[in-house]
Image 1 (cartoon, rainbow, N blue to C red):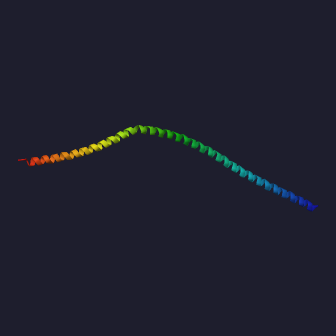
Image 2: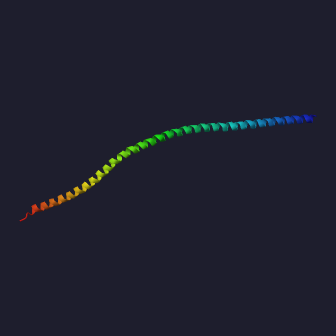
Image 3: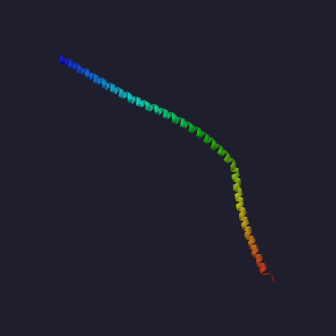
Length: 122
């Protein structure tokens, strides 16, 4: 019966070892799952923070869109003035050409008058 008692003790020891093994495995799996759960909670918080940031960007983008539309409406009111300035610039260019021609004509007349005074007709 000693052999039976040893066999029972070995079985009990083996059962305790398996129990410890499964308890350790269970603790390890719980730790891994808790770590994964913590990572998922962190990811959820990060997603919430990013969503808040993007909401702020949407507000900024809306403000910029309104600002650009206001600038467009203001710049369109300047179109008439830009056209007037272009027309004035064209007229100034034409006026400068006329002045240049008149200057050449006056120079020609001046040279003719000087020629007449230097050589009076007889």
